[in-house]
Length: 429
Image (cartoon, rainbow, N blue to C red; front, top):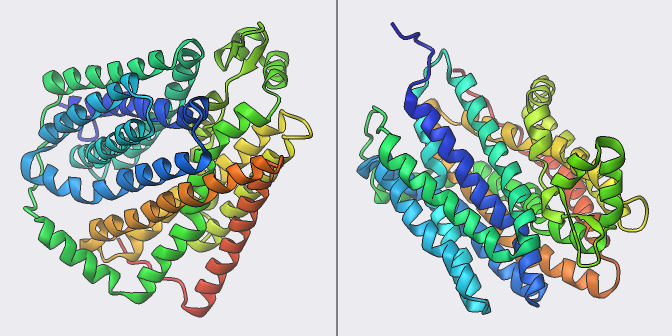
């Protein structure tokens, strides 16, 4: 007899396709700014694409779950892949701004279709005995994919950008066949929710002025600088930090074999660390997330959020110093930012689910995606363009000081919110 806390085969199938999807997604996204700069496009043009890309990636999931409920997870997964594959392949044949923008927006749409389906699968096949372990494994798989994608794509783009895009497309094709042959629709209670009801319920949730204010505050003061980090850091490292020195630092500590995983030789035969390969804090999240969650869990949600933002802001300062001081400060900056993200992003999601009435937890989380999409949309339009301005002034490091200031301002406004409007009451289980 199977143990009641054992995971069914579809659990492992879902986690496998999550690794592959994050491999493709982050393999393209983390190097995309470098790619557009390579083609000669401005930071303002890049920012427009990044903004709409992130907007679609986080608005579409609000509604794609409704279709998955009606038509099934498996069908929606296959539809997402069929949207993904031609979108990625389009990058092989177009170099025009309109063509690249269309491709990236299509990828964002496909990613949005896919995003809620694996987590919903995990939720459907776990129970009270294994749900914590199940979602812990899922979160780890997300970060494994986010680590491997930029690592592999970075090496491939050092040879040819097309190789990086082909690798991403192959990953989606593999996902298609894994899903087609091995994904079994998990048994679950069908809610039968319609889009009309979704809009109505979201309107009800957002009619709570305090909750709506909190979502806007989190979107502007937390998600905006967070997404700006991911938009900018690969380009900043690749262009404005001594990447040859970064390679030597890795080689000195870990040896040439390990350093070579993150680096490639340039046209002059000099080994340089590739910007996108070290830009994600996913390495640190895999190692430290449980410890950071344990520590942050000892504090209330909003103080934990403020503490995490302070640590992330400190990380931004070290990223700025790396431009003209010691290049290896980049690693400390990304590490501190990662600690800040680990202390904040999961805790906010937990907070939203617990301030919602139990029967409305999913609804509140759906509206929470609006907060993330707001920050993502503004991040490209504001900070990517501002980064281009600072580059022209020969002070690219100013972008990190500005983002650090933004986080500090966010800490103040969140504190002011908690003192004037009060923290939300968390419901019992």
